[in-house]
Length: 156
Image 1 (tube, helix red, strand yellow):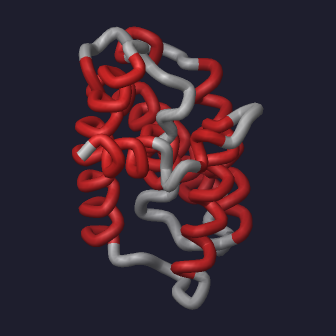
Image 2 (tube, rainbow, N blue to C red; image 1 turned 180 degrees about the vertical axis):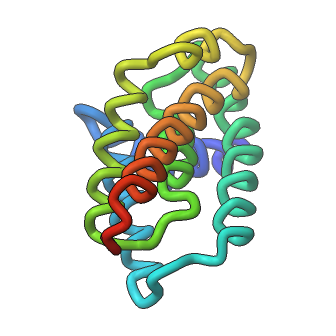
């Protein structure tokens, strides 16, 4: 179980890349998302949302286990939260280069800036706090992109 938790929590060990593991995980997630869905313009929203929920739930459990193993509140190697947040940033949007690039940049901005209530969510216990702040950063990024699409209906 410990190895499975580490594998999931670190995003297949992407979190062990030295430097900026959260940014690397977000970038790898964006590239994988593009490769998987590059043949389709839209993703079935229910499938996408279900995948985010599953990753978030399993990620919270795995993050809590790795946090306990390492005796750290939010270990830097845990990046499943960035993966779930990054996927949240792409919810209900067409898969286009603009949306992928803007979604990546906006998610990283909100994840680093942590506007209200994101910073407060980090204080939640166990894996919930680890996951919640990134999920809300993803929601903020998605909301900005949704507004851009509503305001500028050009098919990005």
